[in-house]
Length: 214
Image 1 (tube, helix red, strand yellow):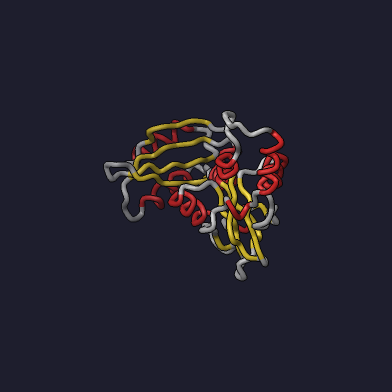
Image 2 (image 1 turned 45 degrees about the vertical axis):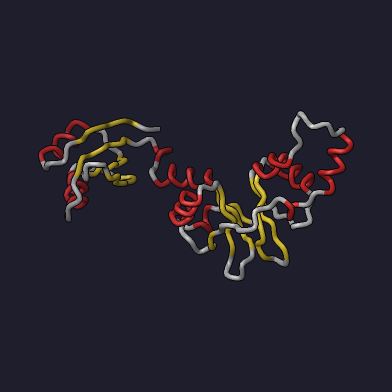
């Protein structure tokens, strides 16, 4: 799954000389949380809702509303934007984007092409939706958690049991546990769960949890 297929294409862009007031209005109107800043078709910064909040006047200010509006009208994005922007190439995978956001502790990434032009933006909401789709959560399948070890052939043996019963697997993921064991999570069109559990246990793969999702 690639960023190009999950990003918001042609995002709203602003320039360094866009006023803070205009940037704030764009965010409010479109419910954005961040706006890429470009100059000469190149990414030069990013402004977030947090940046705008930090320069917004405090309720305790002694300035009049007219003075506040005047100052905000004069202040430009270049004065508050983050210049060291973390971005992701359009050819990257969603997993790469998720890792960059996780390591950088940010909620969104501008997506750039080979020439450095901003062609999209991908956010934590997009990543979350990818997770939901990859795991097949909207499909209404049965979720089984199977206790396994990290050995060659485990996946083959487990999926063979599903195949023997004619059960179609919709998605599969593994999670490492602190003790070195693994949880194999499978979502499948399983109807006779008891028979499936019995056969898996007989192969040495006990099912620790079962739930119907969706």
